[in-house]
Length: 103
Image 1: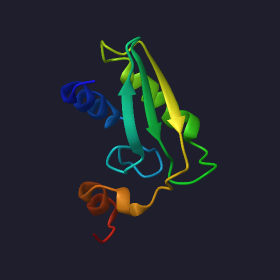
Image 2: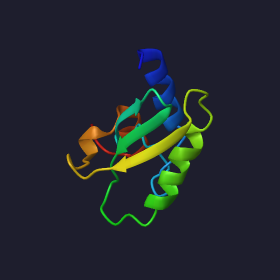
Image 3: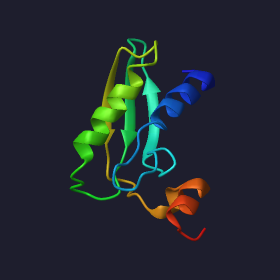
């Protein structure tokens, strides 16, 4: 996958907002990677801020919905992982400022 397509996929994922925090999952540092195979199946490897997040299903559906808008993507698989664990250090400067977290 070329860099332009990867940037396009990550850009689409910036439209997925964590409903509890009001910040997108990319700037929160929840997305660990995105890949697109030759069959057009996108795999989004991500985590959540906490195990047992009650909104996990909602976020997963939003990920699939935004990926549908990319012509190269035929289907999307969301791979939620817990290692490495998420921490506020993964957040972008933008997200930290928006949430009032010192840098």
